[in-house]
Length: 244
DNA sequence: CCAAGCACCTGACGGC
DNA sequence: TGCCGTCAGGTGCTTG
Image (cartoon, rainbow, N blue to C red; front, side, top):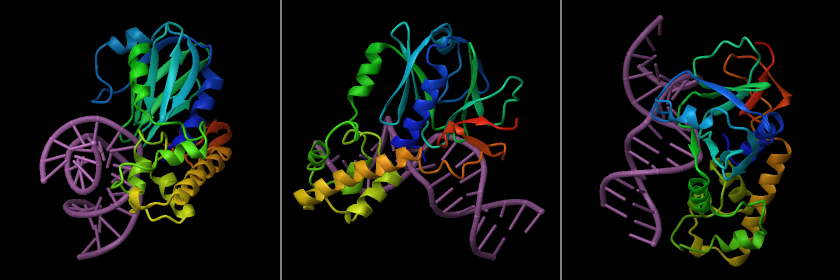
């Protein structure tokens, strides 16, 4: 499931393929709680040029030329998929972005994910709530995040995005396991060495996963049951469909 | 202030 | 064959 390495892999692919492109139109395929009806979203997103695609924690951020941004959270099953002309929308496709040169589908089986337009100020507020990016600070900084509250379980702390950004169930379990720390251990029971070792394992496991473009990329099959060409896709969340 | 649990949503899978 | 219960799991909200 998408955590920091998977989302970062998606970000790189999106940035590579849509940076500098303009959103000509969007086609909404299905409305729902996570994707309100009405034209407000379309009005804000259409005509915008993508300056770049950023990531913070598990959030993808399309930065636009007018200072606004579109944020997207994949949650469990959200995906961005580049498709060819003539592509027939699939059951769980929710929106198609028509850019000058790319056609991009936002798809989400379980509909936990969302895309949303925000102002620069709103974006700032949203991002300020996150803890440090684990691969952009030293392990010492991470270790210091794992001191309080003393009663909080170590795993619960890792899952809290305000403590450290981008870690989910898989990498929390993996880093705790490697560090030899039971997930239920309270932060107050950890030694300084425990914290330091755990911090280092967090960074190590994330780096390793990032190097292979996320853990679940290798056996990923898209919703049409077709193999996905990973030489031009990213992780489990973004792929060019080989045979549409 | 903090922890625990549930809601959100759908598909996959096991048991009968 | 099909129905039902359970699980998955990030995050936000409610409850204790």
